[in-house]
Length: 210
Image (cartoon, rainbow, N blue to C red; front, side, top):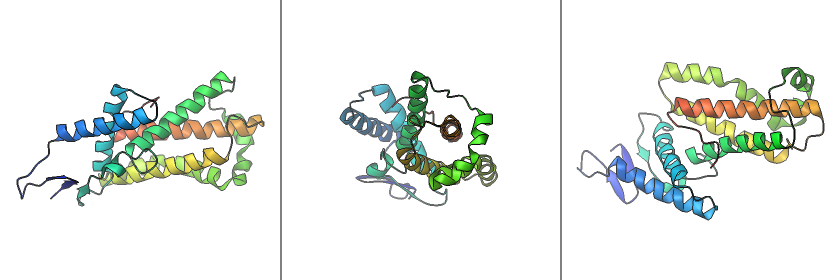
């Protein structure tokens, strides 16, 4: 048995199957319901999020292990899933859009950011996030060599977790110091790039808006 879906099983031994099309339709239906609850009715996004959720669930598990589809995990918008990563990417894009509206320079200003580098010690989550972003090339190489995408999936989830914790405790748009703000823009842009590239490597298209 390779994949188990509560209420239905895909099993070559027992000769019982649920088709991928059926799985995708169910994912789309459930995502659409969740988006409606959030006031974000968008059938096109629902389909993309549903497909992403299925792909990610299959890829985040080591190839030798069976996959269990629990919808509450597969479509969790708050942790450990493709919808969660898509939300985090969309959040980065939203921060950058809002910053531009406020007249904040969202470009990566290395010169200013370097001047604020010592402030990484002020917030442990800021420092951890900066270091984690810098590990992306290494994770990419290791994933390519091992042919195991689950390591990349775990890395992206770690980036999203630390980013969301950091953003909730360390103001970005309200930062009065221009050098610290430049450093924070480097972090937001870095997370955006890492999640975007990571998702694309997994065959998932990032969404600028949910």
